Amino acid sequence: MKGRVLRSERVHERAYDGTTRTLRAARCDMADWLADNEVDDELIARAALVVSELASNAVQASSGVPYDLRVGLVADGSLVISLASLTNAAGPPPRGQWGPPTVLAATGRGLMIVDELSDSVTIDRPEAGRLVVTATLH
Image 1 (cartoon, rainbow, N blue to C red):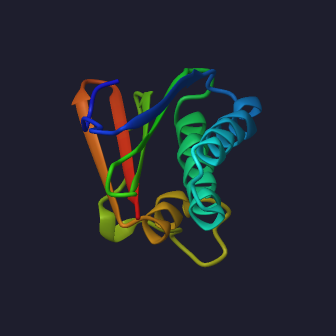
Image 2: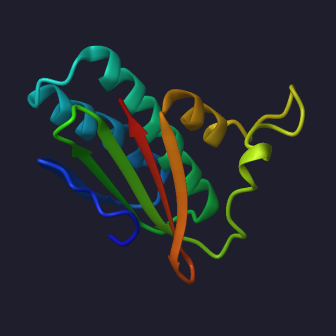
Image 3: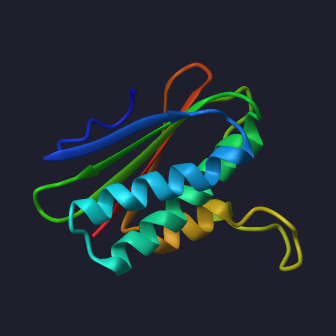
């Protein structure tokens, strides 16, 4: 997976089919791995929601196209979640526009939620058609 290099002591990495059927699996696989690594419940809950939102965005942007999830536990206790996907979509809007266009909009909250739950969020396009979203949680 290209994008930000994770300098982690422990890494969980897995590819998923780009369908809604994989959303729960991605969230649960990561949560189980974090629990096995003795991460506290509050951080697991935040991370699970971040993964759910990022994976949902990837599937919505490119249905049927696999996505890669990488989660790293860093020595300082932080958690780095990176989701890479292939897409022909224009990509996410500028950070100031992360959120629904109106209060009643059915979609558009994913990156806003990820940003609120994370200490930092970066979006990279390391190559044409590839999008990598990385969220760091402390």
